[in-house]
Image (tube, rainbow, N blue to C red; front, side):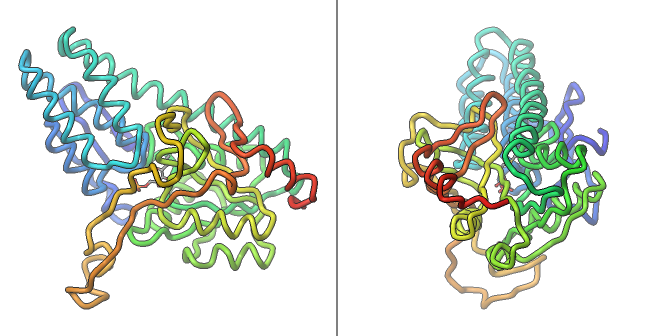
Length: 343
Ligand code: MRU
């Protein structure tokens, strides 16, 4: 396994960089069953919508090899994998893509899982290129100060990432002054993972607490907000890591573009409104402890939604591998006409 990939299929097992331990320890998990992969996904050793999809696909491969013709057992594993993280549609799609080949045998399931991974790599490249091109064509300021949230890079995918792939491309054009990285409470994907990736990529960045985002916009230090997504409704409402919605509201207030970079398959045509998205509720101890240390009374009741849903009218555009989608064109036109985007 190279340090350039978070997941690697070695022919008999899925090797996964344990993201719970980054950036301080680089530990590789060797996962040999669907149950182990489900546990790694649920516990966030493997995380990020596209990456959990790829991991789940190889979970089906392992299950198909273990259970052979007993497809009912594989389907039970498929349900187990799907239940681990209900918000990311990539997970469900990858499981369906692989289980649909069960009747052809384990080799066909393996080929399907490998295609899920290859498609992820291609998609990341295309999003990176399209996103950078769009931003360079629509924003005047150089170099840019970009605010991002959570982790959307090579740790969250099996390629270069989604929003972070765009940032890497922009940096390649010399167009990035700094990336402002929200720490992403409670599990600190921004502080632990995005800073690690940006440092390795040699891209200037500064870490800030999540609550600093709106204040930095107010003081004129942000040109663009750029995030990923776990699921997007047919209308363009964006489910992403908790804290994203607050950034979108503040971006609107300050006339700053709010862009989302995500694979086309993130768009779920079955969902119409923000309230249709199933938002995962995570365990209480993620809030009542930090790095294992208690920070709140043990029995404190907690509300811990892992994601929020940004309404479509706050989304400037969604960049996918095939298009730049403006989900709310009338509002967007008014913003442009009113000179709201000054950058
Ligand atoms: O809970 P996580 O760490 O899996 O959340 C990940 C995110 O919110 C990412 O922004 C999203 O999956 C897009 S990944 C390219």
